[in-house]
Structures are given as C-alpha cells and as structure tokens.
Length: 352
Ligand SMILES: NC(=O)C1=CN([C@@H]2O[C@H](COP(=O)(O)OP(=O)(O)OC[C@H]3O[C@@H](n4cnc5c(N)ncnc54)[C@H](OP(=O)(O)O)[C@@H]3O)[C@@H](O)[C@H]2O)C=CC1
Ligand SMILES: CC(=O)N[C@@H](CCC(=O)OP(=O)(O)O)C(=O)O
Image 1 (tube, helix red, strand yellow):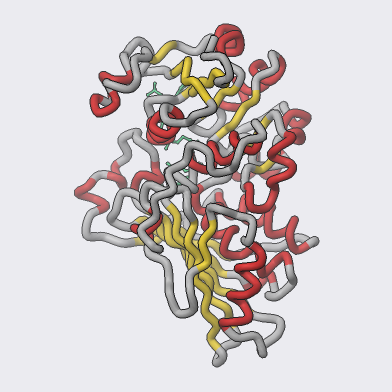
Image 2: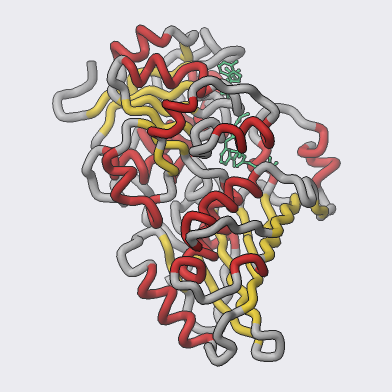
C-alpha cells in the first residue's frame, strides 16, 4: 500500500509515450504514490532501463498484467494502451472499486455503435460505456468529479473542442459551417515503430492524412452536438508536421451575427474560460505557437474575425502529450479526488 495520505496509483502501458509522461508527472505529484507499472513486451524490464534519465527517481519493474493484483494494490489505474484493450481491462478494475482513467478511445463514446463503426471493433460493454464521463474538464468538470471511469479525449479533439466550445455553447456560429484544420507532431502516433513516423519520412515534409475519415471526427461531433443541442457534423482534416510535440488547431466557422468583432469575441472567450486554469486566451492580435505549450498542460487560444467573410478563425495550441493526453488525465484525476485542478502539473509557461 502507499504512504499514509497518498493515493496508490498504477499505470498499464507505462513504456509508451503516454505512460512515460504519466510517470514523469506522477512522481512529483504530492497526492499520489506510484506503486505499479504494467506492460506487455516491456514486462520484466526495469522502468529505469527503458528510460535511463528517470532511473534515479523510479525503481519500479514493469510487471505483467494481473488485474486482481493491480486492483488490490492500486486505488487509481491509468490505462495508456492501444485502442481496444482498455475495454477488456476496465470492467474488472471498476468492479473491484478502482477509479479508472482510460487514455485510449474505448470510453470516449456514449453510443458504442459509433465506436464500432469508426474503430472496426465489436463491443459488448455498452452499460459500462454509459457510465464513463468524457474527460474534458473545461466542459464536464462536475461530472468528472463524480466519475469512477473517465474516457480521456484524443489530442486533436482536445485542441479543437476548446477552440469551438464557447461559440457552440452560446449559439454564436452556424455549427455545420465549422471547418477544423489541425496539425500534429509525430509523437501523436505513439512510440511503436511506424514507417510514416520515421525521421526520414516525416522530416522536411508536411501533409494531410485521414482526410474526410479520421476517427477523431465522430469524437469532435459528439461533443459539438451535445453543446449545440442537435446533431452537428464538422469537417476535420489532420496534418502531420515535422516536429515531435504539439498540436495547432485552426477552426473556421460562420458567425450568426456579422456585427461581432474580435474584441467582443475575446470578451466572450475570457468569460467562458474564467474558471479554467489550463486555458489561456491570448491578447488581441496574438496567435498561439505550439512551443509555448511544450511541456505544460496549457491550451493557448487566439481569436480573429474576418469582416469580409463573416467568419471567425480560432487557433488553439497544446502539447499533445500533456493537455492532449497525460496532463489532461492528471487534471481529471485531481477533480476525481477533490484536489485542486492544477495539483502536480507544471505551471511553467513560455508566454507571460
Ligand atoms: N500520443 C498521443 O499524442 C496521444 C495518444 N493517445 C492515446 O493514448 C493511448 C496510448 O498512446 P501512446 O502512449 O502514444 O502509445 P504507445 O504506442 O507509445 O504505447 C502503447 C503502450 O501500450 C502497451 N501495450 C501495447 N499492447 C499491449 C497489450 N496487448 N497488453 C498490454 N500493454 C500493451 C505498450 O506496452 P509494451 O511496450 O510493454 O508492449 C505501451 O506501453 C493510445 O490509445 C493513444 O491513441 C491519446 C491522446 C494523445
Ligand atoms: C500524428 C498522429 O498519428 N496522431 C494520431 C492521434 C493520436 C490520438 O490522440 O489518438 P487516439 O484517438 O487514438 O487517442 C492519429 O492521427 O492517429
């Protein structure tokens, strides 16, 4: 068991990019003790052997996955696994009373038919999926605080939804006109070897992929529909850019009231995110850069209006492994445990 007062926490999938980012954050988190790391091909290796720069801080061995044992040792379990595995593990952990935060797509959809159609996997745990809360704190803070199971958002949906939410919630745009043009660094694809993520393939190159069919589209649409109060379809195009960390999402939409100017919209965004410590609305005329967010859980948002087209253009920048993944999962953990949303997350920001 963990130290008195500290919550014992485990990570399944500790060797991956999400896993190592969780480890780096959790070893300095004052509320938790990291007691278990699990994996498949890495099982049996010392974590410090895989990540020597953390050897002096982490003396855990990556263990094979025994759910009974994990539940006996951990109060909270992070699942940082490829899609389709969390749904095989979460039910047993939940039944034994663990709180579960899943970083994959398995528990992001309330309707599993959508998941099955887009992810090509069959599921039989609709009842459990319905208990899961979508882990975007800026929209679902109260529900996350009560949840036993959180389905953490994808990286593109996080950046894109934070840009779109104030507009949808207040009916300021025609939802169907939303076009999302997003760019990600290569770490978004995970640590496993993939040809398109090799330096020789990705460097000095910039291209769209998954055009008109990327699986983050229905995830973004689910939340947009929730905010708009009716079914909304959006156009989402992701791009791979030659950098390691970061996402820049640029969102275009037609304003319902063509009289709105940039300053009006900035006031609306600032009010919407007034109680959200991890969203920074940039001053008038300043647009976000991905490097400002690197290593932080921050989402930077810049807003512009084009009076010639009556379109709003919103730009959001995050670190895909932080606000887009591990950092956001810890923000959710903080809410689930009744702690301050910022606990254990680095405050450093490159923009004042
Ligand atoms: N990278 C990103 O920017 C983001 C990723 N996500 C999602 O988070 C999840 C983790 O992503 P990421 O960290 O990038 O992935 P990685 O490919 O870097 O890591 C995957 C992890 O899963 C483990 N694993 C794979 N197969 C099995 C198995 N059969 N049983 C047990 N463990 C297994 C691996 O362990 P081992 O090495 O031991 O085999 C490894 O630790 C994914 O669902 C991803 O889609 C979400 C938001 C952003
Ligand atoms: C650059 C890159 O490959 N990015 C990943 C998105 C990572 C992510 O958030 O995926 P999940 O929804 O599976 O969690 C992709 O487009 O598949």
